[in-house]
Image 1 (spheres, rainbow, N blue to C red):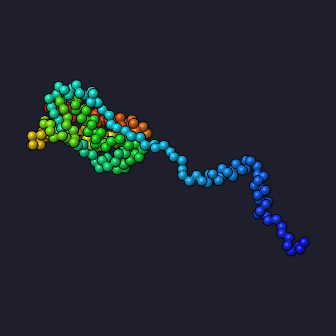
Image 2 (cartoon, rainbow, N blue to C red):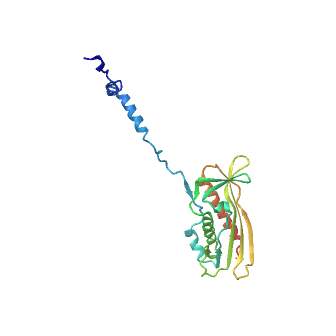
Length: 226
């Protein structure tokens, strides 16, 4: 045989195949896991942590019997909100005089003005002198004795100066005639009593703000003509 025609076995041919063939089982499992892991392109799905809340107050079942015997028919106009509350469904926590923190994972399940309107309507229907409440959007086919306009100034959680957390609610209201003169017969400012919460339980904050709206309804009721 001509020595010039003799070729040595390729170092990247048979030998590597033999080496792979005789790898220990644990090594083959490690290689397979690494290859499969490289194919995991999408992150694992996570549950949505967002929670939704509503304002609560007297229910219609609790006010129906009382309303049947009243004599006043009221109109409840659309509740006014500052833009920073009206343009979001996120619950709001105020830090200091100027900082507003929107809570991405704690949201109102309905527009805040709709929730305030609903609670106020039920509060007013619980008043013995009230026969009915035509709330926004008003039907227009029911004669009303008085109209009520409410403007919310604050409805939010707040970081206190001492580092604690509280709830703050403030609103103004006006009671006017419906005879075309727009005569104002009553008005007032309502501020909820100081209340604290832990800064984490937004269900507790929703309940504190619900209590505050109910307090506003009770304050308006005291100014209704008897």
